[in-house]
Length: 236
Ligand code: XBP
Ligand code: MG
Image 1 (tube, protein in one colour):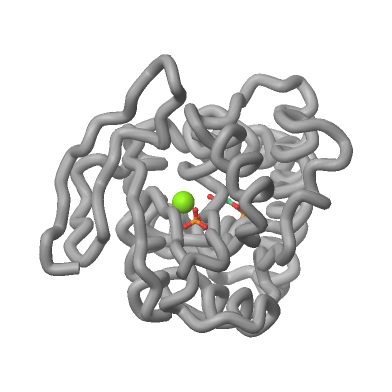
Image 2 (cartoon, rainbow, N blue to C red):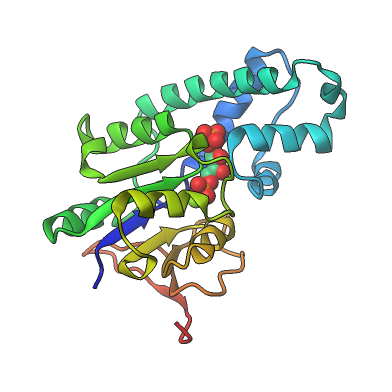
């Protein structure tokens, strides 16, 4: 029987990428007097690299290799990324990013049925707090039994490490859990951790490969707005 649901954050709980993380990166670049700008299509491409620091490094390698000569490259990326997190916080506090349909309802339904809820994400832990507090109020973090985020494991998604970390804290086996993800990288991580996984797509991820998912849904639905089933994998 189902004992826990493990939620991804970015793209799953809320559409944070396009109007949250992306402008936060751009604001940090401006603050550092860089002429870099990540537009919507470029950001879609950069999303194949999970983790903000990793994404900046990948961008430098592809588009701004002169920065590779910096002796302090690691520290510089870290401080650029810290600035990005500060801007992300500001954006979340302005409250511009709502939870996706059905997320709040599902969280409360699971809790009322004593099914544990957890978070497994590559995003910085503070970002999880900023999003949850701005959308569900000050105590929102306490709704979750385990929160696994950011650099707590060295290898980010698509590696399964964050899911293994969360399941160990929950003291549960994969077959007792359900993962909810929005992206191919997230699905790969969850499947590599042997987790049954449900996908809710968004604009950045709708054309990705979701082979192996239990089902691919438009969203988690609300009583008044039923979700639609995009594909169903009968093998699982
Ligand atoms: C989310 C990410 C994150 C965010 C930015 O992937 O890749 O990197 O884009 O967060 P997933 P940070 O939804 O698969 O966990 O800048 O804090 O890393
Ligand atoms: Mg995601």
